[in-house]
Amino acid sequence: MAETTAAHILIVEARFYDDMADALLDGAKHALDAAGATYDIVTVPGALEIPPAIAMALDGADEGGTEYDGFVALGMVIRGETYHFDIVANESSRAIMDLAVSESLAIGNGILTVENDDQAWARARRSEGDKGGFAARAALTMIELKKKLGTEK
Ligand SMILES: Nc1c(NC[C@H](O)[C@H](O)[C@H](O)CO)[nH]c(=O)[nH]c1=O
Ligand SMILES: CC(=O)[C@@H](O)COP(=O)(O)O
Image (tube, rainbow, N blue to C red; front, top):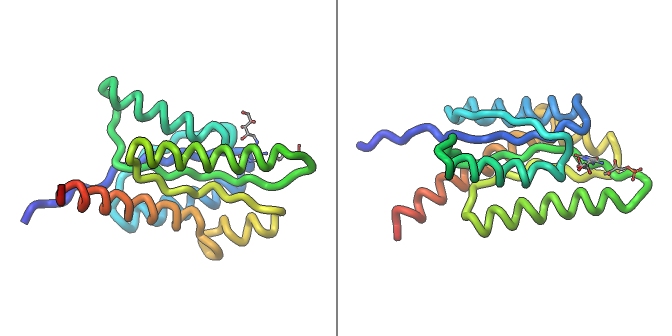
């Protein structure tokens, strides 16, 4: 029986809120460790920088750099006083979706878009919403689906 190789994942985390980023990363790492996946972690300033970081990783792979089976995007976007929330929330998610579809990428999107800190913490902590873990498991699921669909060509 062919041995399946462990998935190799790139976690791209936005550390706009350090403490919440820690919680999301804890959940994602816990899920990936439980699945036996390996991963690298890169950090960007905010959610808007996550899609370009994934694109840079793809370019790096094309140039002989690390090939990733999938990606986990982690971030927290909390509404403030201005329209900027909508830009950050909508553009980061749209760019991730565009990358996933155009490049057939397995991306788990753990960029939370919330109204306030209470909503943020209720979803970031592994002991509560565990959205970091959910995003990691979503990436792993899509990696397996890609393999399945790829072998069934
Ligand atoms: N307000 C939040 C941001 N804003 C920063 C942007 O994501 C970006 O880093 C900046 O516009 C420079 O290009 N980012 C978050 O991740 N979360 C926020 O609540
Ligand atoms: C999501 C954001 O960009 C937000 O943190 C910005 O806050 P504000 O709209 O009050 O400048």
